[in-house]
Structures are given as structure tokens and as C-alpha cells.
Figure: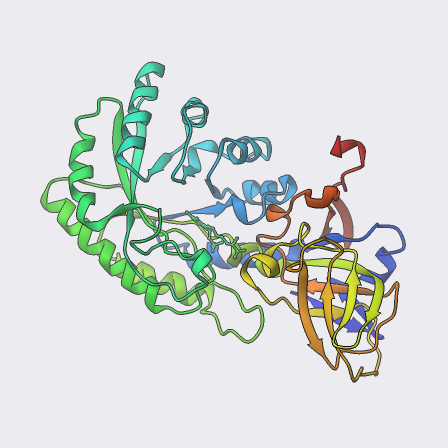
Length: 408
Ligand code: LLP
């Protein structure tokens, strides 16, 4: 992202953030449209000669204005709830390019999705198959079905965000998938359209992607022998980004390598990227409320907390913190950046030799565009933060901070 200091002041897409702080109450999210566009355009250009569809994974960042940027670029969407489908439609998204993932789709959600003609359901169990068939039959429509297979691959990522292991709740096991595919022909209101898998998130190695693609290719070959023809293979999301010193694979290398595996198959490739489109596009700006120095530990108490940004508390994720105004000072002490919430996990980062800071100074927490606002809550009855988008060097409010009234 275009983040740089100009005369010691942090700028983001040429906007001086400290100047913004005079008018906007912290904490707030600040996103760069330029960077979002750049990330999406890279996927689009890498895939231009491949029969493919990008279904942006809405859970990564579900802000209405951000979704509408993707709708304008004709992307599809990967959703996991009726709420997400509703948001996609409101954002101008094309529901015929929506894939519906998740292990627990309710009757209401299935009906809502069928009435909106989504492209397909990524089905995760036999129970779900019969449920979709029953609802589709009541509505007098046919539902497109893709089965999610669990490729039993270790994605080498945080255990909380790995999904392709046999102990995970996701997908149908490789041993059962053939028989479940055969079963589909018994259901009058279902059409087979694809096979789907997703092995986890924040994956920075190529191997798990290639290994899982190869496993799914073997299954596709088995299906062909049984005369079960598919229209697409959905490879899920999961491509990681560089938060600190990780060296993730590029979007281009990822797309080229996995597409190669399926090159002899006449199948549409569906991708469900989330983090690799929005992750590096956002900052969380926060003001220091107090600096508390103790015998053993020193704390910088921010006005942002784990309810605003949950990843450090939930996954022990380390996001860089940088000052809005740079000085040439260095503190000899070690500080923990924490929030005001009454939980000991309400902390963002521990830093040695950070520049000297004082009350009322501002900092930015980096790379919070994915699973930032979308994972936020009202815990401790804290209102949800403002979200701003920088678009052509102008600031647009894309979510207004909740008021106390909104909390009643
Ligand atoms: N498709 C499916 C079926 C998924 O479950 C996910 C993410 C994605 C696509 C998008 O994955 P991505 O490209 O963003 O890695 N809250 C966690 C991440 C949870 C990911 C859940 N599923 C975090 O903050 O790291």
C-alpha cells in the first residue's frame, strides 16, 4: 500500500492522516481504494486467459461500499450466510455469480438463496443435500450443487484457521465423496455442477495448494469414470499476505501454479480470495489515552480494543504498529500496546525501543483490511468504529461510527 512519511507525517495514498484526526473520532478504519483495485486487477489479469470466476470471500471485509467496488468489476461472491447474500445484493452484486459455503445453512437461508438464483451451494454434508432438495422442490426450482471435499492437507497455518484436515468440521471426506456424488442423481431438484475445497487461510507456502489441487484432480478423474461430469472446480481461498517477515507467494504465482494442475480439464476454475484482496489495504488509526508505567511492565493504552480488531487476541496475530508522526527518539523501555477492554488478551503488540510516545499521540495498526471490521463486536458496549475509504485522494465515509443510541 502507498504508505509513506512525508515531512515525518504518515500519509496514505497522499492523505496526511494526522490532519484527518482533527475531524474524525478514533478509532477508525482507513482503506485505500487504489490498493484494493490493484489487488483485484492483478487477479483479473492473471486469470484473463483462463475460464474462471473470482468469487470474493465476503467475510474478509463486508463493508457495503467495498462490496460495491467488486460488484462494479463483475466479480462473483463467496458467502456464508443470508446476511452476506443480502449485503451482496444491496451492493449491486450479481447473485447468479454467488457461491454459498458453510456447514450450517438454515432453511431460511437456503430458501432466500434459491429465490435469488445463486449460482450454487457448496454442500458440506448429506443432510444438507436432502434439505436443499426438499426446499428447492417446494419452490419448484432446481438447485445447483457443488460438493465440498476435505482434501486432508495440512496448510501449515494457525490451527484456528486450518480447515482441510480430517479433524476439521468442513467438507465431505475423500472416501465418501464419490458415493455422495452418485447419490445426487436420486434427488429430483438438484443439479451437479462442481467440486469444491478450501484448506485454510493465511497460507504462505505453495505446496499445500498444489498438493490439495492434485488430490482433487484424482477425484475428478474418478468422477469422470463414473460419467459424473462437472462444470467447475472451486479452489477456495487462503492465499496469505506478508504481515511481518513472511514471504507469501504472489497472486500470479499462485494462480498460475494451481491452474496448471487442472489445465487438461475443461472446467471453470472458481477462486474465493478474501485476505489477498483486502488484507493489505487498511489501517486502524487509534489515539493513546494513557501511558501507564509499572515496575515490571509498561503499557500504552489505546482507544482501540479487541472488539475493534480481534486478530491479535484471537490468533495471537502480530500486526505492525507505526506512529503517525515520526520522531528521532527511541524509548529504552518495552511497552505493550493494549486496549481498554477488561480482558488480559486485549493487547495488540509488545514493542522494544519504540519511539517515545505521549498521551494523545496517534498510531496506526497495519494490514487490517481483512478480518478487521468484519470480526468486530460491541463487547464492553463499545460502538463500532467508523470506516473511511480513500478514493481519488478524497475521503469517503463508508461506515458511520455507531452512536450510543445504536447500542440500545
Ligand atoms: N472460502 C471459504 C470457504 C472460507 O472459509 C474462507 C475463509 C475463504 C474462502 C477466504 O479465505 P482467505 O482468502 O481470506 O484466506 N478470521 C481469520 C480467517 C478465517 C478464514 C475463514 N474462511 C483470520 O483473521 O485470520
